[in-house]
Image (tube, rainbow over all chains, first blue to last red; front, side):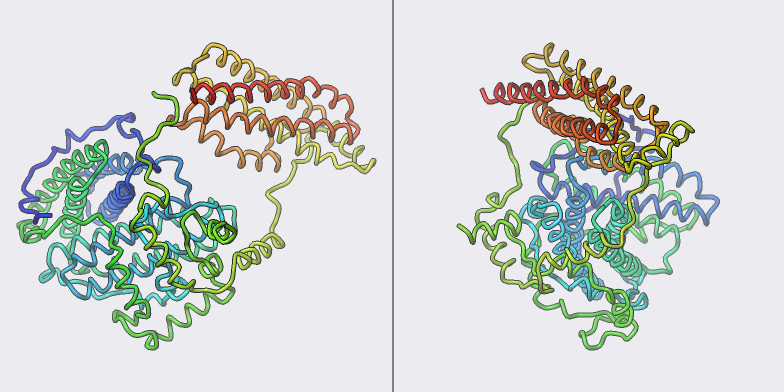
Length: 392
Length: 241
């Protein structure tokens, strides 16, 4: 795919023409069976980005009187975008199947970001987190197989492997070992800033999804597994959120967030295979350009700076929505033993005493992720199919 | 709406990836599990929780003096009136939900169409009315024991949980009439066996009059089951032609 030029120049749809009806918001969902898994990946990712946009603007509004009304105006549209996107998920996804889909987003999108990221430390961070979400997929797949009798590969559609990564039981760390070095707002490429915003948003929604649906399960082991993995997702939100430069102004953060939304919808438009869904991405790309332009005006008004100082440089390619199997297998073969000590990635034996202690405490009465996948290896059609094959 | 199942671009199944699939499977078998054991480890955790669990909830005590006297009388004879009340509450809730399921089914067949629409619709409306009458009958039975028919008993709650998927299937605009009829068949199979049990339980606990009053409802449920089985068979066979 070719580099993206002049992405920020279009004016998009003016805010007062960004309108919805309830029927409009609740359209036909995607097909779990017939749509491509990457269509669902885009739905989940863009939903997460919209939720994060609302979250950021709500928090900013608590601190800034002048921005309260303009942010409320943008938020109302974003809320409805959020609704229309999330409502694309069809009701025949069980919560556990949707969970598998969320992990596929975390794996494939983070892997694409890790390869495109120009900053080596940030790229290392994405690979580090990737191996943990990769392991979550294996644990949830075992749960889907052993609880509901379903094959996770019917959600993954063969794009993503189902094997252990960095074991979830080993991912529990002390909070101080989850905070990373931030990029430098002056030196970092714009793409680095977009990546950090995007992945933080994705992980945040994954955390919120798990913490909300965990109690919907009757099975105590499923409740334990969601409790355990939601805890890691909180670590991931800490990790990815800390990649952003904390000295960026509120207006810079808002501007970068809008630019991330433009970038993500643009990437979705470029690669969407479902024409009806593609039309939604096109419409929302125009909406996001409208939001970005409004944010640029606010940036000029309150920051007294040119937004072009932030929105600088060429974006090399759209975000790649594709299977990253070979890249992930390579990372898997080399980086599973890595651990975090403070902001550094270190060999296993150099882990901090604080993290070891935290982990020992949490796992003291057993590890749900290990229990659910005890002896588990994925087979097409579930592990029961392997028994069937042996009998034949 | 083409209201039948069609061949199409279903992307699930291992055979969708004839080249990459076997490699994916080989890789999955090549990487060992990170923890040893079997599904038995999970069973042990579940068993520990079962041993420690509280119940979902309780049967509310009857609110009237007459009810308390009846309950006390049952207690004296060694019966457990709360069991009968729980089961009455369950059937009551099930029949009430049943009315809504049949109403949803009526909407589906009217919108989606059917090769014998008028006959099917008439049967669905008639059964919905039967379910509503059964709901009334059960309310009266619960009241006769001095209990509150608007309370949710534990069995009613559990049965509501079990029925969640039924409503999801019927109300999904994408599901066909035959897919929805199969759900209704599940409803009727359960309903049939449950009425039979309820009558036996009423008799066992000395409520012969109540058991007799349920006879007609049970016979109607038997007829519902036969009717729905026939509609499902006819609809699927028609699709197959």
